[in-house]
Image 1 (cartoon, one colour):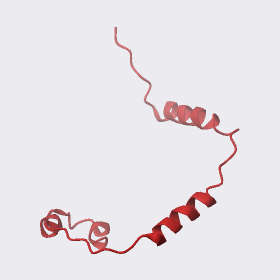
Image 2 (spheres, helix red, strand yellow):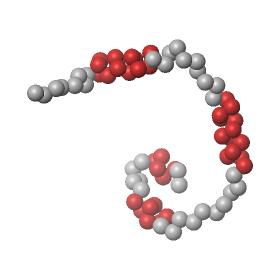
Image 3 (cartoon, helix red, strand yellow):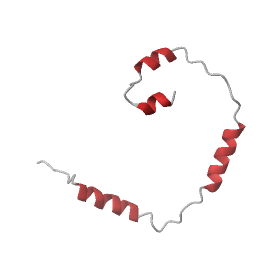
Image 4 (cartoon, helix red, strand yellow):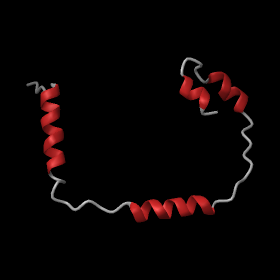
Length: 73
């Protein structure tokens, strides 16, 4: 016996909406404190020089068709 799942966009939307509805009654957390602690931690880090001995190899392997890849180097 085979069982087939309903993979239509409509069924997927129903599943997502049902899942989301479970969390509507929950109070939304205040992320401000978490973000502030994260930023403070980042500011506390010391800068260090990083050496990647295979950087030239990686540069050759990155696709040049994607501009966002090239701009992040």
